[in-house]
Image (cartoon, rainbow, N blue to C red):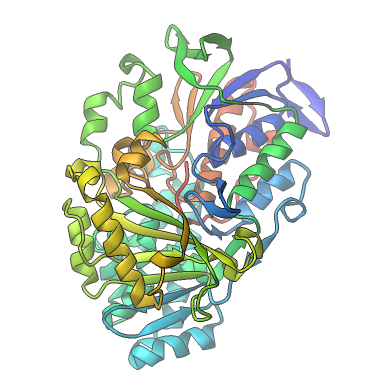
Length: 526
């Protein structure tokens, strides 16, 4: 029965099970709990966060597993505000300036900043003519985001959504025939400058030469709204969300492995968890879509996403990871985020797309201790190194190549002034694509989920309302990957679910779920 509380209609007596305590599952739990739903959140791991967690290694070294920075915290702040809390009272976010240091193997560097005069000067050091177009790029993308923001905030579980007023208004600004790189050619002639505003497509696991031009908004959002480091690591955000959820009555069960979703007729009615049957009015699945949907939901309950279609789906790339605990400090020149962009970046990306292991790869380095002294013991360093590589469909024999590739990556670090790494290693963990698959349950090791090409976006991406009583949230679901985007997806999922559970089809306003905040993307998580 619907009851009144704080002026809101609530759904006390309704029960929802959420499978997976990644960022999407946590955000959905908060919104449903605020609407009066009894939420049970089941997580197979001993900690919340999915890949958005921070682990402590022997020796006191701390590392983020996946995402290492936070973009556009306003969406999460809105969710906390909906729950009567302030995000800043739970998580300390340090805004970075420079945001990151780009090092071009072909020559030159850019220390990215959102201070426009300084950014123009940085660009002018390598391409004076291109510096004149920096502000125009931002002005045009400000307009692009204005028109596309409402599209990414709406649900696409029906085909008619493709003809919504928001979609029609946005179409003139999307230019679907252009790639990110092609769109950037209108502003910047130097390929290095284009790369400075295009490498962010790797947050989606995609090539800037194939990624739809819509995603020039990624770099725009970084500069417009900032790049943040959560003190204590990105896992601190997940823990803060879980803490608030528990205080709101969410039943979070860790070590709770779900075996399958139960159905009564066509409607999801519960799950089997650690051998126990749990009943619910609806089920929300938060996990790597291509993996978890095949494991938990029989094919007859997913007619649009049968195994054969999932097998043919375009996937993102994978990553080869090094988590290194080092004796001693880093060179002063090494900032919080550093990105080495290979001399022939187009070839590097083409090799990854074609399933070839790059021998001259680009790489990303996080030195969190530059900002946050709590990420390593005094006088020591936690270093996070990420290399984009093909996913497991490429058939690369990682067992035989793992040590060779490790050596290659350590050699590449010398280009960033890190030439004495090996002798200083006190802790080391490698995660290659096979471990993304086997340890983290990522389909084909594709760490950024389904690719974000035009035929796997909006209506063509797995729907938030997946079936009667069955909902999805996470990077493989509309609107897509990246922490703030996943949080936006949680708002869509919660809104649709509350509408279904409410006899009077309660909408977002009645449920207390905001729907008008801007949208951004960042590092991947599930």
